[in-house]
Image (cartoon, rainbow, N blue to C red; front, top):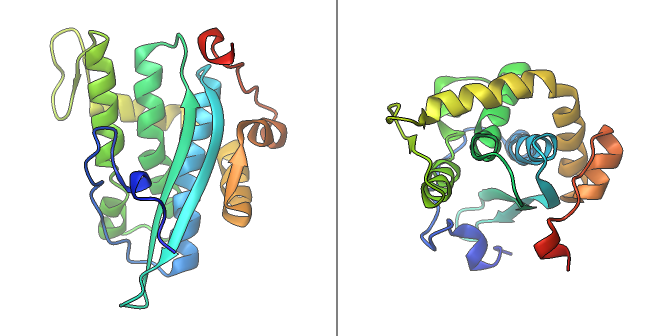
Length: 198
């Protein structure tokens, strides 16, 4: 059964781009779990409260194929803007690292990890707070998406064991709470921001 339609939309209500991942279902599902685990683990380490993180899979009725997506729900609070952006980039970076680590990397598969919706969300949210994030250039006083991906890549290298642990647990259980992620990794899930907690 397909997920709720809103889960297939970006932060502006537009359909997320769909990319073909040339892998069998099990390998592609684990890759999506790594994507969401990257978001969740980096969020926690940057002081962002993680509510849940999950892989969403469904069969395509006419073709016999499958579709995959995922979602990580957070409550940011008063975080640093570039940390928020790096958390957004972490999904794509962790999924590509999964392909390399598991001997699955090809240029076509790496391209299928591209998460335009994550990039656009980071650009729009940072812009609403007066920060400039460029898609393919470094704007005056800001950073490029490539720079933010580099920040995420460094953090993922340090946290690969935690990301791998979360990804395999998510692949097995479909959804994890922030508390479950914290318990299995030894990380701290920051408390909810006060405005949300009350």
